[in-house]
Image (cartoon, rainbow, N blue to C red):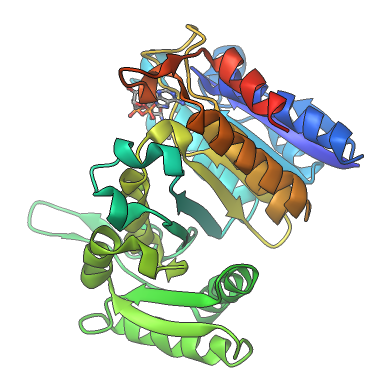
Length: 350
Ligand code: NAI
Ligand code: MG
């Protein structure tokens, strides 16, 4: 039995979380695995009730679960709150509290979605990249930081322990995939990158079966667009990963289809990449694929249910290949479906 904390959040968050839960329940039945769901508030919906975007009760629900499944937070109603009361502040706090240091963003291209990308189909076909971004260190957290009238500054620091644990994850994931890691840095300019490289090379000694190469971040940005198929796992720091994962995301097409995971030593959190999409909330038209695909990642990476995960991914591919599309990915000639219809179609493919 696995315990899953559900944090639906705001906007379309609850709509896509519902869709993922429906899929998980069916997958659980099919594979004789029981899931226990506990729902808690986060973000604006928590602020409205408790005047804080993240309560201790919600944190406790997360601590007492095996994994956390999050929808999305935020929206115009809470935009003008003080920084620490904003829905988005809850996400940072939660990641920190759960020690989630590794952010996973797969960029996989569904064959039937090739025409949705800005890249040529033959460049894209077969792309399956996993970007592993360090999430709790680097320049976003380094001290000292600040600015005055004359200057602004931040500090990029990585400790050996921080680089080691993310590098280890990268090599381990590469082992489950195509056994190639590209470590991305800026070692021609930054000492912190030279250090990063040194530690990664050291960790690699435990994974002699995995191929490692190093790439400067500017070149990596270019290569992702020029020839994304060359990559298997990309390992990188917080800042570079923030940018590269968005580039990789866009070559695959739509925001509504991108899953993610954030992993720590003890906890894991799965969530769609997209936000709360206030412009379409409550209309029942949100694309549930990002959330459903995040659930598939959860089965694979947290519960070792590889087969179930694969079935969900293949079901998504099949439904897309039959021409069913939610509004965000709809083109002339497609069959337009709602969130609920898309979810049911995916389940029917199991
Ligand atoms: P967004 O991702 O919510 O929406 C951007 C555009 O993509 C919108 O036009 C939206 O309708 C569309 N879209 C997003 N997901 C979709 C889906 N599943 N199906 C169909 N269309 C979809 O980003 P935006 O508009 O910048 O932010 C809205 C709110 O969400 C803000 O308050 C922002 O801070 C928050 N946000 C929260 C995130 C999270 O909870 N992890 C991540 C990004 C933004
Ligand atoms: Mg970003």
